[in-house]
Image 1 (tube, rainbow, N blue to C red):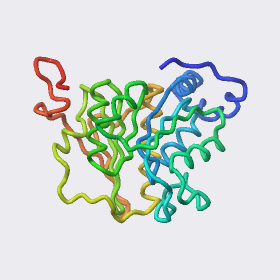
Image 2: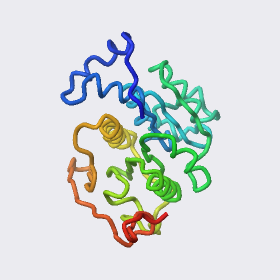
Image 3: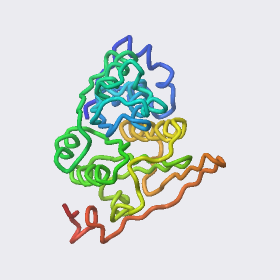
Image 4: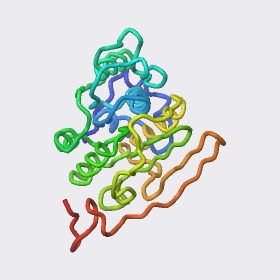
Length: 255
C-alpha cells in the first residue's frame, strides 16, 4: 500500500473527515492508495462498499456471483429494481461510480472459494468478509492468514449481529471460533436491511482504521449486538493454539 497524494478536488471532498484527530490528510492519502476486497455485495457488502467508496478508498474488488432478484431489494442497497435479472456486481459498480467516479473497481462475478481466494486476496490490503456461507468464510480466512492480510469479519442473523477483526498471527481467526461449519446454519435466514447496514458501517470503519493506522481495532475482541433490545456487548476472543489454520508449530503458522 503506497499513499497517494490528494488532488485539490479530493481535498475538498474529504475535508471534514481529515479533521478527525490522528487521521488527517496523511490518513486520507493512505485510503487513496489502498485496495479492499469486499466478499459479497449483498445486505452487508453493499453498505461496506458504499461507505468505503464514500470515504475515498482508491480501489475496491467486489466478488459476488449471480443476478439481482426481487428478494435482494429489501437490503442490498447497491441493487435497483431496473437491474433485476442482471449481474449484482455490475449493479454495484455503476452505483458506486455514481458516488465516486474516481474509484477503481474490479468486479468478479464469483463467490469466494478455495479456487479463487488466493488470486483475489494476495494483492489487496484489507479483506472484508460479508459472505453468508461458511465455505466462503473459511476460504477467505485461510487466504488472509496465508498472505498476512487483515480480515474484517461481519455477520448477522435476524436482529443480531457480530463483528471482529482478524490480524494474522496476532489474534483469533475465523477457524479458531468455528473449527467446523455450524450444523444448523442455512443459506436463507431472517433479515432486516437495517441490521445488515448497522454492522456493515462498523465493518467499513474497521477497514478504514486498519488502512490508516489509527484508533483501536476489534483485535481479540468481538462486538455482539442484539437490536431486538438494543443491547451491545464486547467479548474477548482468543486464538486456539491447535487451530488448523493459524495455530503455531515451532513459531511458524500452518498453511
